[in-house]
Image 1 (tube, rainbow, N blue to C red):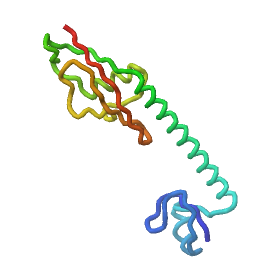
Image 2: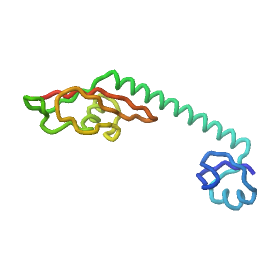
Image 3: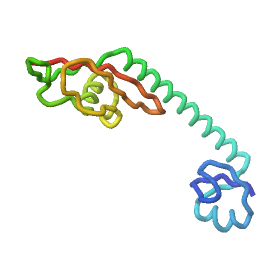
Length: 148
């Protein structure tokens, strides 16, 4: 009997996969527990439509991430911080401040996505990595200017 798994079943398969099982196993274990549903022609067509819709959505999200990456590459991030006469900052610029500056520019970036190995402690231009969804990674130019 062919069934479509609704949930992941160890030793059988992941949710959404179509598997062939013995009729008794399906009728007495999988179906009553809500782990699977019978694979009728209509169910298989619905599953294929769900997969196609999921693939289209994933493609749109990847395209959106690529557009965001391109926009981030083309625009430098400017951060003003208090600095001494030698260009040394009073304090440091952290990943949180870089993420906040990116949010003010209109990009939805969390501080955990900003790859800053150590806080910036001097005025200057730096390259900072930002991880975007779907494996996109972009280097952003961060310009730190001094106040005072």
